[in-house]
Amino acid sequence: MRSSSYNQSPSSRSKAKGTSPLLCNDKDQRDLLSFMDSIRVMDHTGGENGATNLVNVSHDGGTSSSSPPPTSSRYENQKRRDWNTFGQFLKNHRPPLCLSRCSGDHVLEFLRYLDQFGKTKVHTPICPFYGHPNPPAPCHCPLRQAWGSLDALIGRLRAAFEENGGNPEANPLGARAVRLYLREVRDLQSKARGISYEKKKRKRPPQPQQIPSLPLPPPPPGAS
Image (tube, rainbow, N blue to C red; front, top):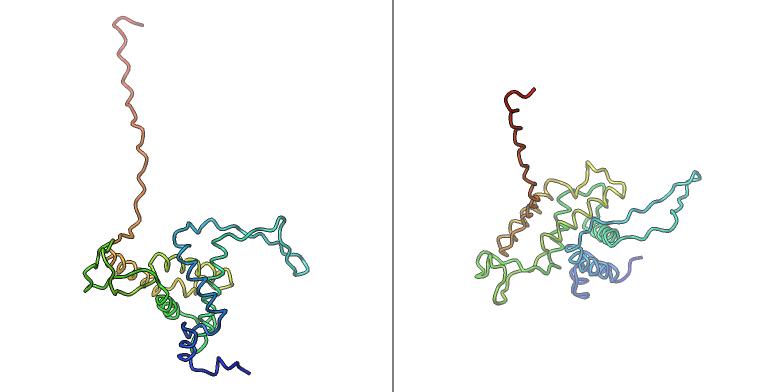
């Protein structure tokens, strides 16, 4: 039998808790808050120095960890939290979705859902601070998820999808629609915030200038 909280409508549960109806219980809300706090932190970290966990498979079907036991890196912990949050989103979707039926459109729905927890001010074209990197005063423009956070999130979820048995060729997190959406968000936020997201080209170190060798003078006349 379902609890009384599930007999209420999604909107009433949302009002009672002051949170989104897609995550229905307190544990989901705590996981989401932890997820949103850490996603903004991971956006400024390298995130690629994850430790590799070595696991040996025995002949009797069991697994035994190598010694000493590996410690999960910050990147791996964040990736696991991201994956759990995405799975909870699919579970609470209406209708519920299994991973095999998830498409790029559902990923876009997930990304737009996260915007309500964003902390990045994105100015509208009618705002006097549109394109201003350092606005001198507050405005009423909406808060959104920063493009860098979303881009890093999709990268971690793509890796987690394949690590959890997903087919790389059917990865919805790498769908063309998702890539185009991220590109649109990058361009929109770049113009609205007056910030360039273009990667700076690395300057090559100057090559040492080779001095051409001078030809040897001809031998003097009469020399053998």
